[in-house]
Amino acid sequence: MKLASVAGLVATAWVLVQGTWMPQITGVPARLRGISAVSDRVAWASGTGGTVLRTVDGGRNWAAVGVPGAQQLDFRDVDAFNDKVAYVLSIGNGEASRIYKTTDAGRTWTLQLANTDPRVFLDAMAFWTPERGIAFSDSIDGEFVIFAVEDGRTWTRIPSDRLPRALPNEGAYAASGTNVAVHGDHVWIGTTASRVLHSPDRGRTWTVAQTPIPSSESAGIFSIAFRDALHGVAVGGDYKEESAAIDNVAWTSDGGGTWTLGRGLTGYRSAVAHVPRSKSWLAVGPRGADVSHDDGRTWSPFGDTGFHAFAFAPRSRIGWGVGDRGSIARLEKF
Image 1 (cartoon, rainbow, N blue to C red):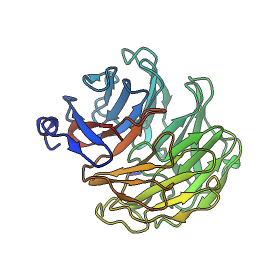
Image 2 (image 1 turned 90 degrees about the horizontal axis):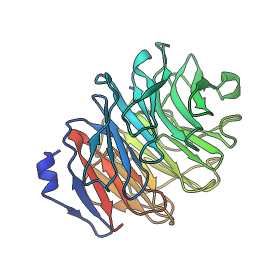
Image 3 (image 1 turned 135 degrees about the vertical axis):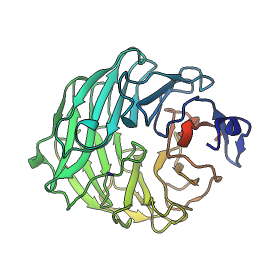
Image 4 (image 1 turned 30 degrees about the vertical axis):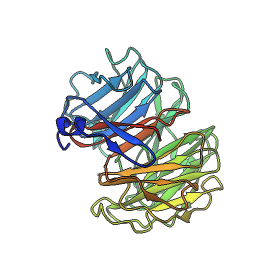
């Protein structure tokens, strides 16, 4: 559904009790909403104006590797697997919703999902492997629209008779590319109606659960993440009220069957990420961030630096946040 300047950011490192944000130069004016951290050295970012960025040196240098001719597209999600292989997803009605893939570090791109249905609006995607993934669209006529790929090339729509019925106008907020989460064979999808779709078998069967996060035309779940098959966190709020924090985080310890409200977020949050090898979580939004050390039950402020999206590198406490006007910062010493 529907930088301060770079120089200023480079001049300042935001030092926090539990970590340090280190601003990095990108040289692009785009609003960045997608980030995928492959390792401490390799990461990919995406955003407006067909922007795709890639670093292979920990963020000292970011190279533009966007899709040729895609300047009108808004890439809200990027999922990368190494320094060469990545997928990007663009949002928008009809043909604007697309998925591209590169296997040569962005030198060339293949259009894999060339949507032509004017009612489809892609929101986000996630992958189990470089070949197997899933993408979510807003619903159409009471039916959820979910695409899957099993060979790294061909995307097909999951038959609607496998899926729960959608509520009127139920979809997802394409805010950070993180409203779809996978772990093991599981996949969870957070919706605008503050519900969570769950499949334990890579999309063959599905259930749906209601969370206590309030929903409206501008509020609901914006991001969801799991640290294992049982423990997960969903965050959101109202993007029109960025400073408000009213019941906008929930946690689960039973795989998403039931959800309980957490406490302490200090504003609307568009992305949540699990801190590897811990029970800690980091949630970010345009006006700040919060951290939880008890699996999402309670939260405390983590500075006032804002980002649209954030990702930790696997098995690492180093990650990147992305935001407006090409802003990227690396989180260190967390």
